[in-house]
Image (cartoon, rainbow, N blue to C red; front, top):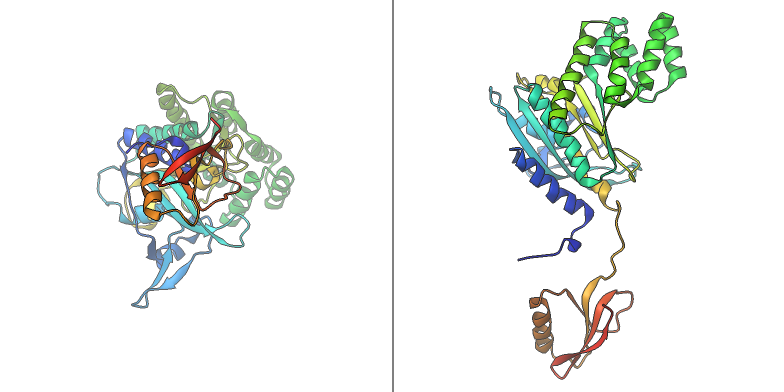
Amino acid sequence: MTFSGDVLKNEEKAMMSLRALYRKYGYTQYKMNKFEEYDLYVRNKNFLASEQIITFNDTNGKLLALKPDVTLSIVKNAKDDASLCKYFYNENVYRLSHTGREFKERMQAGLECIGPIDLYAMAEVILLADRSLQLISGRYALDISHMGYLSGLFDGLGLAEEQAAHMLRCISEKNVPEIEKLSQAVGLQADDTRRLTAIAALYGSFEETIGLLKKLSINERTDDAVSELESVFTVIKSFGAGENIRLDFSIVNDMTYYNGIIFQGFVDGIPTGVLSGGRYDKLLERFGKKAGAIGFAVYLDLLERFDEAPRPFDVDILLLYDETTDAQALARAVKVLTDDNMSVRAERGPADGIKYRQLYQMKDGGFDVLERLD
């Protein structure tokens, strides 16, 4: 059966393109149930976008949840051995809407790479994040940061856990006055305060900003993070990519789970990030697994109205009939037209508001053409 791409919504087109992309690089599809035990999510609520979860009791009294996330399920079921697992998924998740007033079913695609993560594996995942955005729009940016750099910086400055979490929020908001206020409260030197405000403001192409990041480095951990960023970017350049990658250290995530490179993707025309991901070895540790992990999710529901050109027609043929029309004759007429690969909407006319290419009228067991607009 053949069909036109016109019948697919934006998010469905993106989903099919992403699936082909991930298969091309050897990722296999992961399917999960709609439900998981609630305990899985409540033990890792900080990993989720929202703590609000739809729950219910099954017939045995066990508390279950409609999945708000896919990564946790993949990690829970990943093999704990020396092999590398490469999965992609297209799943619907159930989360609070952006307004926080209602739950929404949201289409999501993504991939996870779990196991002995080396330089190539990291670069490949980031490349696929870049390619995913490119499939959605030619106008995009992939912003990259490094949680290892930030945690090394906070440790080097002697920030306690709570202070580091507060500083992380300030950097994510690029809130210079609050960074200065907090720095003064914890007794940091003026040079260190300037270092933190410079980190928060750092943004630009990789080649233009990596030098400044090096100058702001203060210890072995921050040096290692810079070295890793450079190595990954060099491999990505080997793929002929990297032009749309930016360094942006206001991109942050929970230090309880993320430990390395993290990233967020944007396309022109959508006000929020459409892709989010990073290295999350600490989540594997929480599951008692001795492995690394890196992956990302693409929020396909955000593409629903993205760059959507108005459709000139709803249907190829609007076929009108009345109360005297024989239903079998109508069925035969619809079959003839749909067998000719045309879309047909049969209406017991009149039918207002429907945009059609051609208008037909049932008559004497067949149909007459009343109007052609193409």
